[in-house]
Amino acid sequence: MIDALLSAATPFNLMLALIGVVLGTVIGALPGLSATMAVAVLVPFTFTMDPASGLIALGAVHTGAIYGGAYASILVNTPGTPAAIATALDGFPMARRGDGDLAVTISCFASAFGGVVGALALLILAPPLATIALKFGPVEYFWLAIFGLSLIAVLSKGATLKGLIGGFVGLGLSTIGSAVVGGDVRYTFDNPVMLGGIHIIPALIGLYCVPVLLNMVATKDPHIERATEGKGARIFEALGLMWRSKFNLIRSSIVGTVVGILPAAGGAVAGLVAYSEARRTSKHQDQFGKGAVDGVIASESANSATVGGGFVPTLVLGIPGTPPDAIILGALMVQGIRVGPQLFVEQASTVYTFIFGLLFATLLMIPVGLLIGRTAFRTISSIPKAALAPAVGVLIMIGSFAVEQNSTHVVMMVVLGAFAWVALRYGFEASPIVLGLILGPIAEQGFVQGYLIGNAAGNIWAEFFARPISIAIIVFTVLTLLWPIWSERKSRRLKGMMTHE
Image 1 (tube, helix red, strand yellow):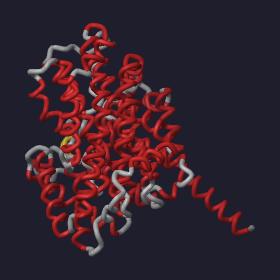
Image 2 (cartoon, helix red, strand yellow):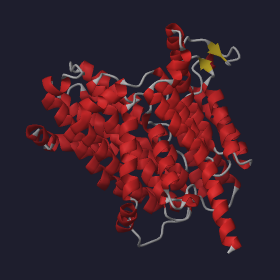
Image 3 (cartoon, helix red, strand yellow):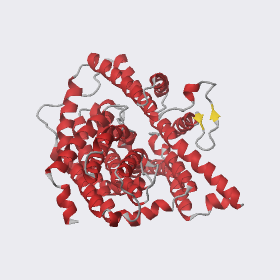
Image 4 (cartoon, one colour):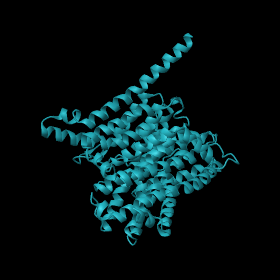
């Protein structure tokens, strides 16, 4: 362990970690350029490196890209990566009132804390934590997706019915194209370009960014309040707020680590689950969606914790936790490293050097994030809308096209964006639609596979409702759905008592 720590701390590996974090942060901040793309671009350059050094570079890019998505979420209301969806819910309202620098600083510290928790879990608990992933079968993933959809009740900001309608719209969009299981072609209207379905990145850009862009053009108000001179990065203010929310910070980091361990769940689900828990346990629930610091802390600490958590099944079981992990797994195979339970014995020096390098990269994210964040907020807040709107428009078109070099994605982004802009005017938020679009394939695959297994075993009911983990997830789902109703009744009762007194 000491040798691995010293190896990770060599100037060359620290330089790779620093460069990786900077590149990942910049790429993650650009709408459409996801963490997966950032890692994929760097992979060929690592083949000539020592395996541990190459892994450190890839892990640093992954970490930086997940954090970098917060910039676009906070400053332009456009999640740079799917993992930053929940960050936009409170980060952008903070920026609009002039606290964008504070939101960026909080996201930096929260991301670093969550990343350290995830990396420590990978370092200390990787083999036992991997057994958790093994216990999740298709049915558990189906119920996990349903639990994620139940968070719509929390994300709907008091309009639960409209949120549920939006969720069903997202589920409907997720069924377009080839079926996840079986490959049946659905709702393509004989158009070959729709066989691949609605790609999440163009959809994310369209549903979140295009309405903001149209509002920039349609209104005279400034996009966000201009940065106040002399405030700097507001480091001590951010640290004080995080100390007050320390339990939320720790809980969200643990949630992110656990969700990251589950293959295919990813940072978007982790951030939304942590956000839901933060709002449920908060004494100021009415502030969420209006610029609550706890919302930013929960989302950013959780999505960064998925980086370390996602490497648990990747390294121990050979099952990628997230799409970037799948690319890193391929790079490991090219390097001749066999993943599996014996990896921590046969290749101990390589894997532990990588884990310590990931820790160093996460810590380096603090100075990098503070420097880039302060510059980004001051720059975005000072640019006139007449110049900002065209620049954002060009960036989102490039981001949509760059995913697969497909012009259809640009059209898809524009159509969904126009739809979201109209829907927003009638009170329909984008988050439930995106949530349905992300979780739809997970729910469909889990349900179809679970049904086939249950049918073969002769007891479909037992397959879905008699497994211990499934029962636990169902209970949490019911509680999540009932929580808004209970909270509303409680607030009415308190108001009634105050009026009576």
